[in-house]
Every structure is written in C-alpha cells, then in structure tokens.
Amino acid sequence: MPKLVGAPTENEICSVVTNGKLLTLWVEIPPHCHLNCGFCFNNGGNQVIGPNALTKLDYSNILQEFANMGGKTLAIPGNGEPLYKKNLRVTLHILDYAKELGIRTTLFTTGDLVDVKIASRLYETGVSLMVKFNSFHASVQDQLVGNSRYTERRKKALKIISDIGFMQRLNGFTRIGFVTSILPENTVEIPQIWQYCLENNIAPDIDLILPLGRSDGNSEFLVAADTVNQISSSLTGNNMCSPTYLGEKGCQRPQYGLYMDYTGSIYPCLGCKDKSHSGSYIPLGEKSLSTAWNLPLMQKIRSREYSGTCAECANFKNGDCSSCFGRCCIGCTEETVTMEKCMFFR
Image (cartoon, rainbow, N blue to C red; front, side):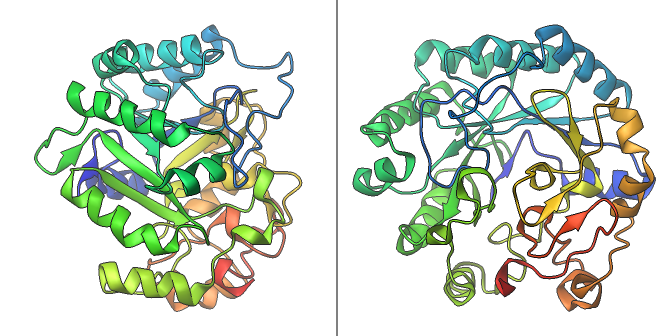
C-alpha cells in the first residue's frame, strides 16, 4: 500500500514516541467552504469568522516554533476548503514557509477547485494532497457534499493532478491520497475505491466519520460494526478492531502531535475540540506549542495512562487501538482522560 510523502514514517513515529518529541502539527485555516457535507466534522462553510483568526504572521511564527522543536510534518485539515478563494492566499503562504523550513506538508482538499495553475503551484511546494473521495457516482457523491456537478469537477481536477505528477511512483511513496468516509451510501463501493487506490499509486485513507460538527448526533451516517468488519476482512484479512483507518492500526497521533484551530487554540487532536460533542473536550489553551506539548495532560496521553474500558481492552493493550478522542461515547475531559467505550459500542 503506497505511503504518503507528507505523512510521518513509522521510524519517525517510533523515534519521537520514545524520546517524547513533537513530530506532527495539524493547523486549521478558516472554515470557508463551498460544499455542504452533512458529515463534516467542523460544520465548514456555516461558521461566522471572528476577529481572532490567525494572520499570515501568526502562521509563520507557529511554523517557526514548530521547526525549532524539531517538528517534521504538517497537515492542513478540511476544517474549511484550503483552496477556496477566501483561503487560498493563506494556504499558499503556509505551504511556502513550511517548505522553506524543511517541513513536509499534507493538504486535505475537496480537490474540485484545482486547475492547471493551482496544481503547478502546489506541486512546487512539495505538498502531498488528500482528496475527498466518497463515491465514483455523481448521484451519490454530489448528494453527500450538497453540491451539484462536484463529481464532474473533481474528475477533471484529478486528471490535472495526475498529469502534473502527484501520482508518480516514488519507491513505495506517493503525493496523493483519497479520503473516504465509510457511510451507508457507499459501503458497497469501498472495495472498489480501495482497489483503485492500490492500482493507481494513491494512498487510501478510509475510516468512519467523526461524530463532531455537522454530523454530531446524526445517526444516519453511522455504519454497523459488523458491516465495517466484513469490509475490512475482505480487503485486509483482519477485522477493523479500532474505529479509525481501514487496513492500519488505530490512530496514534496524540502521542506525537498537536492540533491547532484557526484562532490559535491548541488541542491533543481534532476530536477534542468540539464543545457540543457528548464525547471529549480537552483544550490545552492558547499557549505556545512547547508549553502545550509539555503539559502534564499531554505527558499522560503520550504514556497511554488511561482508565475505564480502554485500559482493559486487548486492542488497546496490544497497540491496535490507541483510543480515539473523537469517537468516545462517554464524556472525556481534562480531568478524566477516560475512554469508556469506543465507536463500536455506541
């Protein structure tokens, strides 16, 4: 399975988990977006952007501190669409400065706004792209994103992205991946999407939705555990024992990374930032990265000192699952850091 150039390698993760260094930073841009995905973890496109949004100078200072701490990989998540006209300038600024600092970057994007000019500009920065891909069929995909002709635009953009060289084979690595949320509407397509990725040097990122933002409390997007395990077993030979990535171990990101929203507030991961979510809300405050990283709470998370159901779970003990803050059922707070149940036991 191809690995993404912009993502941390297993060797990098093992090294920083051992020495306690910060390896990865996810940093948001403002939530401007042209789509209306019902399963959006952030309610993108429907938020009022306040006066506290980070400036270009803020992003530069954040990246400089991250580099000074030895950080190596940066991700810009789909909090808003990074290539949307209202976000494009700040996105390119981040990518350019990250390249200058020697930081590998991954950009999560809807993909459909990419033209030849943008694709060429992105290629120059060395960024890897993670493109939304829930279905091959316009009747399904357009409905899921709430935007007609999205699939048609994405198809044209992917041709441009391929021609520029993002799908070039690089000794087991690639500069493009597909982000696929497992939904009731696309479960029958997951094997086809998986196979397409493997045949075209695309890194598959297939997981269950985060019940945050627009999808919080919306049970229509949930898929039964038995269905997910059947899919996982048919493709990888193993059940999906953790509710994160198909074909890979559960997410370990809080053990080596931090998440910063577009106002500068820092969290252990994106699953901790939704105040309305009945699961977790663990803010680390608007502090420097180094201050947040060295808080006792983050040290506890990195050492996996959890209690509750997870502490007794075989998947947690053997490292197949690290507990997902965004998918826990019972309240996870700074005081408890207790994962009572995972997504499969809702």
